[in-house]
Length: 109
Image 1: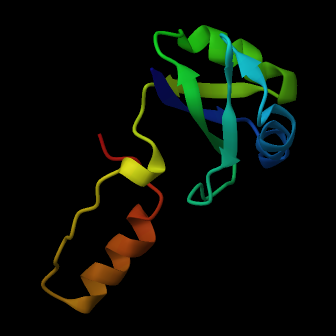
Image 2: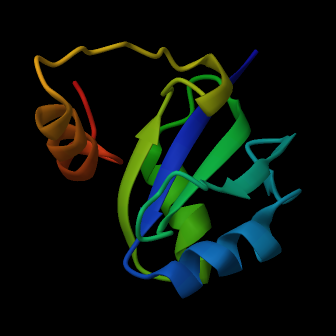
């Protein structure tokens, strides 16, 4: 059984390095799939698939540290393809535009 993870770096160049260098690398006996998160506003986030179930976030951080300063790791998060969407309606167009500008790319929960 496998899980997913997200890894955030200090800068976009490190995230790009991780996607290039660590895609297909082995962690805990499994070949990882590492992709840049196209929804990351600052391009500092990569999504990681095929993470061995039960692996601790520290092991993931140590593995990705080869590519740059790791700021955040979340293991067992939902993959982008399985994330949920929601619809929010506003009373007027100006409020909807403001929400889209302010909240696009933000984290809920």
